[in-house]
Length: 158
Image (cartoon, rainbow, N blue to C red; front, side, top):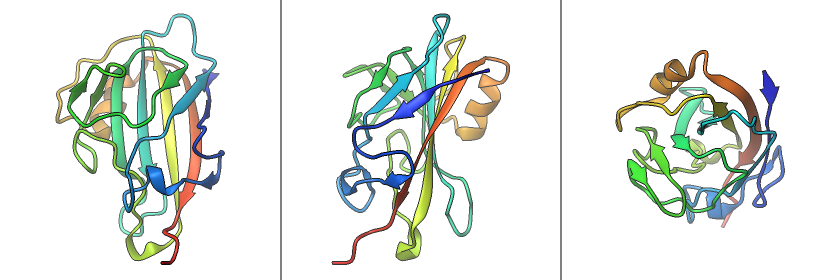
């Protein structure tokens, strides 16, 4: 499987996710840059997980699919099960149902977050209430390439 290179102008890999992208502040999705998308890719999917959640490691914050195979996913994507502007996306039922929900770690401990981008050979036929497990099942045997971007977040003291 090919590897995608994922980056963001908002933060470096393994760097601190800025407040503009956090649940305690503006809660806007970061811009994601994707390099290495295979020519045969039909769509992209993105999953955002909180790897440091004390009760449920891997707590899912965002589940998105049927994104066109573009090299830039724009910042601040709106809420909605299906969004057409600024780009077509379909958002599932993650934390903050049908919208991006950025880092908001309980107890204000530093958490590590993982954005995973998948390049797929199909468009997915998922219901709007689909969860991460549904997405992962639907993409089995359809992933052409995959990449991750990690970030950390802890609220700054007032």
